[in-house]
Image 1 (cartoon, one colour):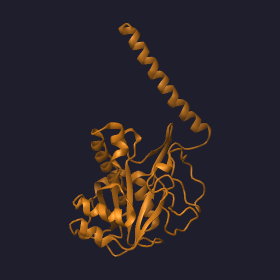
Image 2 (spheres, rainbow, N blue to C red; image 1 turned 45 degrees about the horizontal axis):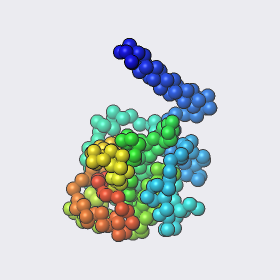
Image 3 (spheres, rainbow, N blue to C red; image 1 turned 30 degrees about the vertical axis):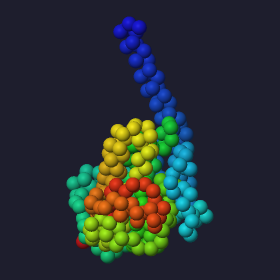
Image 4 (cartoon, rainbow, N blue to C red; image 1 turned 90 degrees about the vertical axis):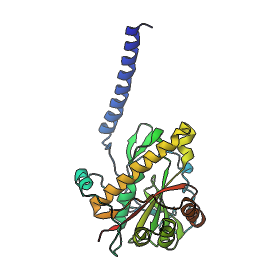
Length: 275
């Protein structure tokens, strides 16, 4: 193939790709649906707009519903999130690490917004729903474990966030703040926060495709997701601090023994109302 012929072939492929995207957008517009949509609403919130074409059976918590919950499917469905209500630049400017929190509960609505910002579903793309944070090859290795100590409407315990249903799955009952803090070198922010989000990862989901380089991609993704959650909390008035100093085996042991979580913990994010 000549150089001119090669350039023509490349241009043809690019044209076909752009045409495909344009057709998808046009179909969305003609059908009256939005390209940017809110997560799936709870049972009392009306029907969600996001397609769940993904393989939910592959999610580690999709079968972990042994504890009693408030709905027939064993999950606590969270309020829908409005993704267009706050200004990003203001949140970035105001963000500070907060280690001391007022003794006040976090609302379920605010918790829902923070979790959705981390790994929630956003655009219903060609191959299925995408996530709030970018993921290498859409391998989506991150799983969020939520340590609830003082959230309106939820009993204290460990919960798994299920992005496809925008819901919490109960994993273990009780107060785990002090235990997590002990594993995190006794950092009081973890013990005192009404909510601590633990970012964990299934490395194999990404290394299975990218080999050893996949570890790097997992760490990138954890940073993307936790920064999203920090800024989402900031827009809601919730302070937070990203904690990476903890005893790996001790923290993993707590999650594995109490809640059956096999994924590796990467970060802790205590959240609460700043003093």
